[in-house]
Image (tube, rainbow, N blue to C red; front, side, top):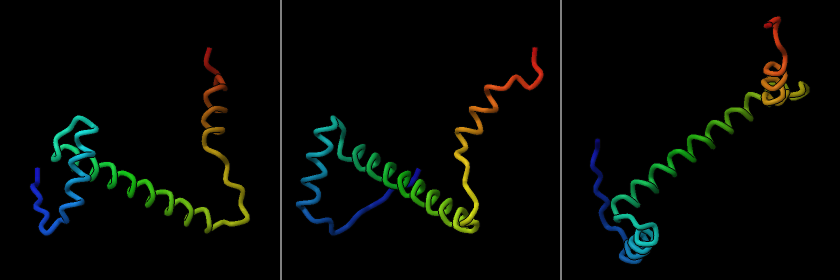
Length: 82
């Protein structure tokens, strides 16, 4: 695992981070790990959704079927099983 050093962080920001960590019953380090992990995960989701929108835009006149409906339909059919 990597280590990071953040220099010149405003004292008010540090105080807010410490208060947030205390509210979540975590150390400051654990709180910062959580914030970074959640933020990176959220960005990955936003990138995925933006990519999906670009793909859908390639066929603007084509109806995009909700995959949940397709999965449910497939699940509900017996496909010749006894």
